[in-house]
Picture (tube, rainbow, N blue to C red):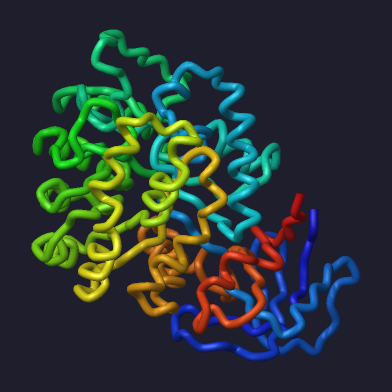
Amino acid sequence: MTSSILITNARVLDVHTGEYLEGVGILTDGETIAEVGSRTGPIPSTTVIIDAEGRTVLPGFTDAHVHVTACTADIAAQAEWAPSYVAARSGHILRGMLERGFTTVRDMGGADYGLADALDEGYLTGPRLLFGGKALSQTGGHADMRHRGRNVIDGHPCCPTVGMVCDGADEIRKAAREQFRTGAHHLKLMLSGGVASPTDRIDSTQLSMDEIRAAVEEAEAVNRYVAGHAYTARAVNRALRAGVRSIEHGNLLDGTSVELFKEQEAFYVPTLVTYRALAEEGPRNGLPGASHRKVSEVLDHGLRALELAHRGGVDIVFGTDLLGGMHPHQAMEFTLRGQVQPAIDVIRSATTVAARLIGMEGRIGEVTPGAFADLVVVDGDPLADLSVLTRPKTVVKAGQPIARV
């Protein structure tokens, strides 16, 4: 393990001001940043020196909507796989995320404390993993992956599914408490139909207001929060009124939703790249035909929703929601958002704004003393060309340079 590194000749992006610090050094001490600036004193002989050669250094990125256990786009089929096999393939997915510069990820259904512990203890190489356990769904909802002819639900906690089915406020409370018992960082609710689920409509609303409020109460009781999968303005607005902290996807939101985001101080997590990938590559990555036909219902609305939220001053966070063999497209989300947002706002969505959502301000998302030494080195100027973020030269997570395989 590296005790310290010194990155020299760096052009550091201050994501708060949107300005560059030219020709500076970054010294780490264990997992954290010790100094940022010019350094003239001696350094320990064991320090690893990396010459940035004038390249741009940014804080490590956060992807706030991933499914690290989603090894295929056929989510229903994966439920039949061995958990050990899914874990092995998840390790490959996690390493790829880190090599792309994502040093923290928020899993939105499927990952558990075992994967988080394996990463923390060094048995797997990957980002810092904030897991929510199983997403909660009503019968026939977005995490109910049964086809119409199947009646039995396998509710075993080791079944490698993204979610679990529960109906009524009491079942929701019990399921929420179970996720938090295992150490879940947040709780996810399925609040509208979705693409991958076989029997629901995209424009449906799911879970009653009493069920949503029960989940929010349980999350607040343990100082955690609820994230909600929702597409339409109706589904988004119900969630925001009930106290849901982050809305995932939201492709069909409207102006009333924007006002509620501001009123409730909630966060918006679009996931534009997954619809592009599903439309072009979904079937060959296992996406069933019925789900592929649903993609068109949301594909062309994502940029409009992003523009509404951006113009309305909503806190917008970076997310991707990729599945199976489409995970390598993760960094394309930067360039897609750049069609609507200024580059610095896109970068902030994956750094400072994401840090506020997950409660890690000052620890991730900035290159400052005391923060985790999560760093991404790129060629070029990301403020002028966001595509440079898709080609990192060096990635450091918690003070450890990541070797590419």
